[in-house]
Image: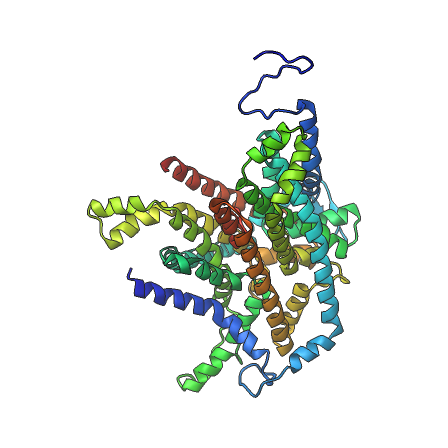
Amino acid sequence: MSRKFMWFYVGLALFFLYLPVLILVVLSFNASRLNVNWTGFTFSWYAELWRDRDIMLAARNSLLVAFVSTAISTVLGTTLALGLYYRRDILNRIVDGLIYVPLVVPETVMGISLLAFYTKMGLGLGLTSVILAHVVFCIPFVTLIVQARLAGLDYHILEAAMDLGATELRALLQVMLPLTVPGIVAGGLLAFTLSLDDFIVTFFTAGPGATTLPIYIYSMVKLGVSPKVNALSTIMLAITAITVITVVFLLRTGSNGRKAHEKAQSSSVTGLPFT
Amino acid sequence: MSAIPGVPRVKIKSDEPIGERAGSRRVDRLLLLAPGMIWLFLLGILPLGLILVYSFAQRGTYGGVVLNWNVDNYIRIADPLYLGIFVRSLILALETTIICLVAGYPLAYAIATAPPRHKNLLLLLVVIPFWTNFLIRTYAWIIILRTEGLLNALLLATGLFREPLSMLYTPGAVLLGFVYNWLPFMVLPIYASIEKINRSLIEAAMDLGARGWQILVRVIIPLSLPGIAAGSILIFIPSLAMFAIPDLMGGARAVYIGNLIKNQFLAARNWPFGSALSICLVLVMLVSLFLYARVMRREGTWS
């Protein structure tokens, strides 16, 4: 393939990827309610959004869920990665299995199984049930990213700490943990976006009072097209873009070894373990 | 090695860390691993087990679950109505995967062979729209495709069409929604595996007289098979279970396996049947993962 043709193809693909999203952004500033003709620039949809109490409540719920599930999954995901570091035995295999299940089971199945489980346990649906569920699919991503970061570190550091008399736990927590901070931050940010973004699992585990933004968007889109959704989408697009760029930037500046950097980057960019 | 008074003699094995007691390190590791393991087991594995049990139960009179260990739910899936939905979903998932592969491979190839300073930027550009909420991406297409939408307005303006076309709420719209939402899933793993190919292999092929397309078809594509397999599985599994895009873009008649499961749990309240459908879905998923693992293993023996 000639280079020229390839650039043309890349351009075409990016056009296909970005055009719908750009249209959405442009239309969010369109005065016309009908979304087709440009009748003038306006911020009124954003103002309307700001006054909409349901949307504000949904945004508040989303942020609350994302913050709490990020906090929990970052701690649990990091301790898992630290516990898996340095040794390989039966525990590693068990944990690997536990981590891969939420990654490979379709979200729809995960959602309905949690719904059935909560009902069986008599746990009412609400924000708590959503948080409990979000932590499950956030942990694997945090663990994988922190593991990638750990893999780039020299394990002799750990051995040196233990030679100097530290127990393994202490060496891991006091020596290795501070070194993995860029990975932890990146993993935490990823968990935050995943939780903020999740629709399917939330759809099954949120009660009537626990509407999050994606759930709200879904019900709005089901009702029909409205400029308010355009404005809301544009805000969410901006937040996501900023977060993704921050994660990539953190991973780039935070790692020493080039290999670790590449590994961490590829797993953070795809967000998936298969690459 | 002479013994130092007061210091017990330790035998140092190369793979054993020194300066610690063997007993404490098990406890240490469990301390670190247990919280995460418990969480994942209780809320990741146990619910799936419950679904498996429910799939052998029966729907109670008021929508509850009566556990009486029978396989009626699985027999019911063989009903042509449900089998048809299963087949339709499989076809849709396959179509999505194939289109993403055909469209995504050249993109991945172009990025992997781009000058190094452009590579990361291009990757980031592919990834950013993919990180936005898929409902928003789907909604963007609804704006474009609907009867009063942008595309119809454009088509009518050209004068080639008198009537607006009905493009939304068709199977084609669902397929487009799937492809748009999952294309980056194909590009990234293929990019990663093309990137890893040893350049000297390509040079060797050139030395042996291979030209342009031959190198692509006989060297690069076979060597990027792991990426193709990974991308395919990343797309195939979620598109098999997806219910929201068909709900929004497919209209009322678009029932795929994901919609069917959702309806059994939320509308029909037949949880045992919904559970059996989910178990079948997980089985299909396991089969595809098994195929994926086989491709990866074969590739592993080559390199």
